[in-house]
Image 1 (cartoon, rainbow, N blue to C red):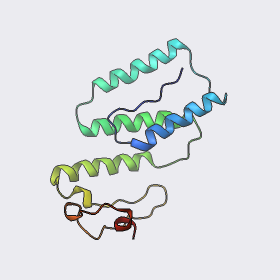
Image 2: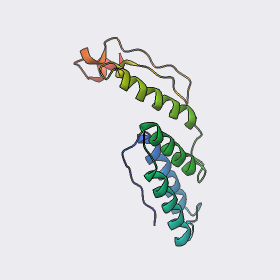
Image 3: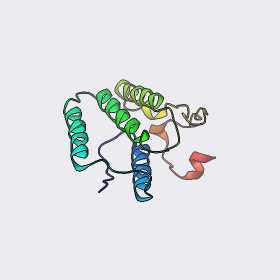
Length: 136
């Protein structure tokens, strides 16, 4: 049995997506599940590590390790998970520094290398969330 599930997370899309790729491989007989005892050991390992988490940075590192574990089980397209973790930590610091302006920061894509455009209006002043306002 395979469980796909989300918890409070940073890797919103990638975590679910990498889980789905492993599930896909299982359904297509490309991936064989470990024995029930081996699965229980793995679950317990993650539960023990989860109990040790103290800070938001710890949570980012934990989820980074989990994503890497999933990546090792399938042919999911490569992306720089470590760089994403750095970006999450920078985002957390920005949020601590100023809760009103952290959404105005931009980041570079770890897939294409493209730097995000700075939005024309600061987040706190942007009252129109239409796609026309954001994409054009």
